[in-house]
Amino acid sequence: ATSYEFKTNKCEMPIQFTEYNIGETNASIQWTAACNPVSYRFKYRPVGDSVWTVTSTAIENINLYNLNTSTDYEYVARTICVSGSNYSARSDMGYFTTLGLKTEKENVTYKIQQSINVFPNPNNGTFTIQASLPENIASTDFEILNSLGQIVYKMPLKVEDGNVYETINTRNKLVDGVYELRLKRGNDYLRSRIIIK
Image 1 (tube, rainbow, N blue to C red):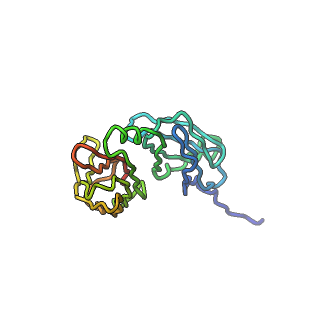
Image 2: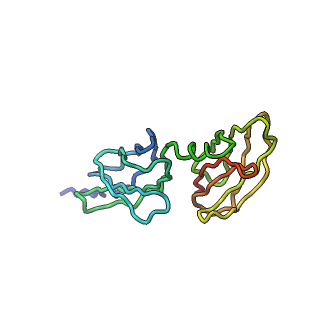
Image 3: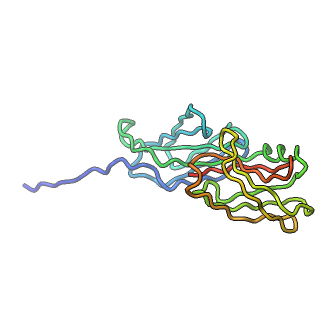
């Protein structure tokens, strides 16, 4: 008689997540297929919240609705492999930020009333600031605030013809988390947010 040996594939966690179609109250996430999944269990929440929203999908894609506007979210997923009884390890944490008018409306309440862009976001502590300011401003104070509203990093930036373009390196200076950025001139400022991980 001939005998055969075989090994079943382990339950693999989802990998290579991509966020797309990010709107004010919606977002879509897709990932690479795991080995023979029955379905996927997906959890998400606003960064800092203690309560997860849990959902599932049978395909390598999920659409999220009724999200908060202009909010940082985090998510994890795992594969369900054998009729719900076998789970993979949790995936690495993913992040996205919903769009919205919140930051723009907040900026309009200040006299600067211009725009700020930060990329990449999330980042590892090194990122670039691109901002548009009134042309009569020659310099601005750049500040990073933690979740308690404390200034944890500060430096002056030059403004040339109303533009700021500066690469900032805070690696080994800030712990992972969500921070508020400010470009300040007196009592007026622009603000945005970053995720360092």
